[in-house]
Length: 217
Image 1 (cartoon, rainbow, N blue to C red):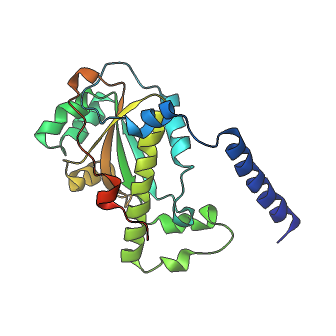
Image 2 (image 1 turned 90 degrees about the vertical axis):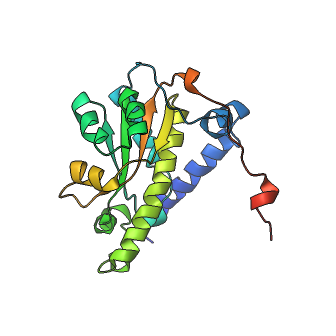
Image 3 (image 1 turned 120 degrees about the vertical axis):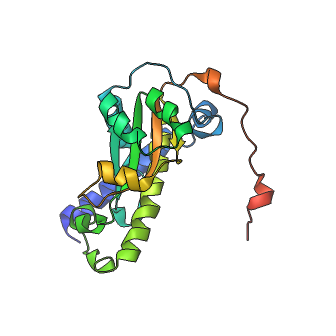
């Protein structure tokens, strides 16, 4: 390894140690906000979400790990009335109002050709042969890792004070034709973003206990 590589590696290790030293465990209020007491929302106030906050969410999201740093997720933030009308064509009727009322709806998508960017994303070794001429493997890798990034995205939005409401209940084919024609990108799921109107909430639904779904072996 070169001296530059040695320095970069040492700097990376020092940065992780500094983060751990500064915060060994999130406080309960922070965990409650991002997951434990967070809710999926279906109604929204008209408080706008500025571009700077969308950029901040993205910058947090891309810090999350993906296999070989593939970063296959792609995002379109639908905010204008015209774009929302285009998106509405794909939605089941019960989801249209939820989307139209949200300040922003993110289309969480993925690029099956992510591997062509690996020389930039994973520069220390050429991993393109793992995916070249292997479309099924590339598709599976892209979908799995973009879904992870979609989860990071939701946590990031909550972490900066926004509310989220993820949605399926739409036609991926229509979204892909309307927003991704010619790009090869594919939609995964939608996520409404904004400041929620909590009066639409109902009780939190049950979750499995550890003993019901977990094993330590």
